[in-house]
Image 1 (cartoon, rainbow, N blue to C red):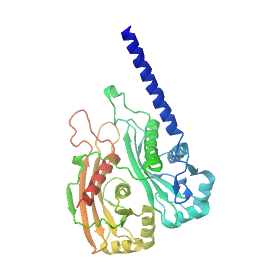
Image 2: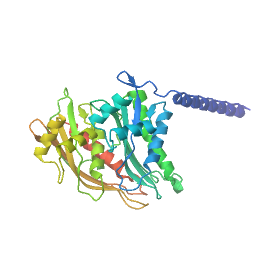
Image 3: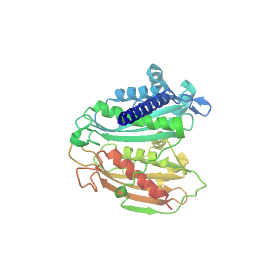
Image 4: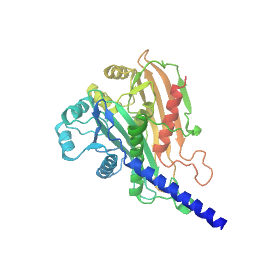
Amino acid sequence: MIFSINFFSKLAFILLISIFCLSECVLVKKNPPENFQIGKQELRIAVLPAENLSGTPVPLKKIKASIIEKLKGQGLSVLEGDELDKFMALYRVRYTGGIDAATAEAFKKEIGVNAVLITSVELYNETTPSKVALISRLVSTGGNPVILWMDSVGLSGDDSPGILNTGLIEDYNLLLDKAIESLNASLRRYLSESRGMLSTKKNRKFLAPKISYNISFINPDKKYAVAVIPFFNDSTRKNSGEIIMLHFVMQMMKLKNFDVIEPGVIRQELLKMRIIMDAGISLSDADLILNGLNADLMLSGRVMGYDDYIGSFGKTKVDFSVQLLNKEGKKVVWASKSYSEGDDRVFLFDWGKINTANAMASEMVRIAVDSMVKQ
């Protein structure tokens, strides 16, 4: 009898806790960040068509529709359909991987949009194991577009296969939805809680730069405007220069002493100056860029390798070098060389193996940037 009483008491307690947890989850879903504001205006987002940096066919419309659906699920106001199409046609907006100052100004004045969501597809593969990598950022509109939030995700269907492959994700639709939901959750945290960037440190020491050079230059009381230029692509992977650039933008904007200039603004300035980077940036071009953008620092570099693999066997490789030029004194104040493979220090059953270049590059860049600010 005592056993029965204790058993039913424990069962009732478990049920009570379960009901409480479910009610809490429902409460969270019923309280989206509806009143989030930029300045004195309620947030209204325009979702641009996704940019394809994968070098392979990608269902861009499907990805955009899924992103919009999840934003609406948060209770956010989203500009879509004919109104956005007409605006883009009127202002001849063809490039969707960034936003320049003139377009940002028009978004705000003409149709009352005060933030633009920009998404780049880095990797997309539907064959088993399926893979996807996305980089997304939220940029304010107006004459001076500012990156408010930025995050990335790289997933493979065999990231967590578990015992007898019970955790293997074979349906690429499920993997894509998981990736988009990961970015949506990150944006939701930014809007509803901290209103700031989150940084998760995984302490992968083997991803640290192989070579690093650093001159103390940071004044803790000063904000530095930073222009991150597309890296010169010396690899076999198309668009890897733009991809690594986005990873550095994402990591550097998390640092309190840096104001990272929106890549779309930089692209427009490079076009205006007619600067073509055949083999990197020359010192004279760097001077023009820094003055034209009113930037204090310019980060540029070279990508020697950025490799993903298709199928169950293979390994990712990321290889890049980077340097930071200070406008004051026109000298390099930081330089770094990084190279890693996805199976480094993996000895048993592929435990710890990194299956996407996105996931590996994100950590490599974060660790490199951390080494830059350590004086």
